[in-house]
Length: 64
Image 1 (cartoon, rainbow, N blue to C red):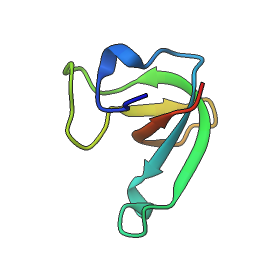
Image 2: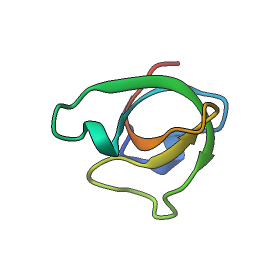
Image 3: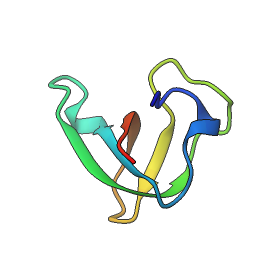
């Protein structure tokens, strides 16, 4: 599913994100969504979330 649409993402879902430090390489980090940080309905680079681990990044793919 697309990580660019806020309505697709809910707390508790497993997602793949790109952290700010990994934007150049595109390395992805997997985790469970704790909070949604982007308030707009759509974002062209992906919705920004905080994972339960505390890491913050933009959703590239919804895994679950």
